[in-house]
Amino acid sequence: ERWEINNAAATLATRKAESRVFKEGGLEWVASVKSSIHHAESAKFALTCNNPRGGKWRCDAAIQFINPAIDGVGSKKHRVSFNEGNRAYFFSDGYMWLALNSLYWEFFRIDRVVIEFRINIISSEGIEHIQDIDLSKFSSPVESSNVTLVIEGKKLRVSKDYLAVRSPVFYAMLFANFAEKGKEEVEIKDVIYEEFVDLLHVIFTNAQIFTNSDRTVVHILKLADRFQLEILVDLSKKYLMESKRFDAVTKLLLADKYNIVSIRDQVLQPVPIISG
Image (cartoon, rainbow, N blue to C red):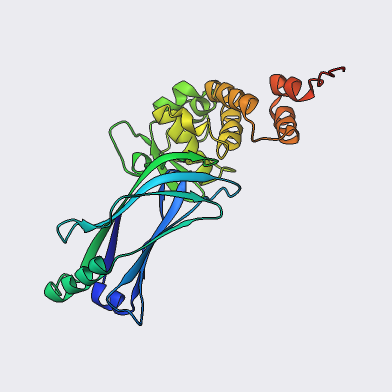
């Protein structure tokens, strides 16, 4: 990840700086640096991580800070164990701090520096890995995009032919004698934008990761049921059957709502009594 410090002379004059939040390995990370008032020649760098899901988790990672503008000057690579009680990695590096500051005086007109911090996830537990969605696939016209879907005022460019092949609901909406037929923009009501983007990502990329996710499986099932995407309905059912993170009450509610007999039977299956 690249951390760009703009207006660097003024920023580092405050003796501290902090990066934006970025995501890696299912965690949210922030890099920072702070110099001591009493020891201006040294500074403490930090890399802090947070699991947005909460609960118990663990992540072992190899961490390294590098300033590529100064011949690759940087810390040595360290293996660090993060968890819910130990979320930060600190190291002091006076040479890097002094080199950064001298760089600004020498190249003051640039007034910007880039610090690279490399994170190599070795192993993890209790962390949900969420793949970022490239919204550019749905935000700009391409040859195959021939209709704009409007959800909560936001526009998504898609192929109506591709949707129609996979969903009889979309086929009826976009090609049959419905009011939406022939329109360049079609509004989809009673849908949450972020959830619909997850659905489109699954449809257009065949990315089953979004059905195989505790974060998304419920709304993927909801939308797949609404738009009669049978394959996604089946995948979502299978995931819920195998998931250990949904309790019996939640599974039973979903089974009743979407008439999932297999999950209802699984939840209501009597527990065998083992006699002594």
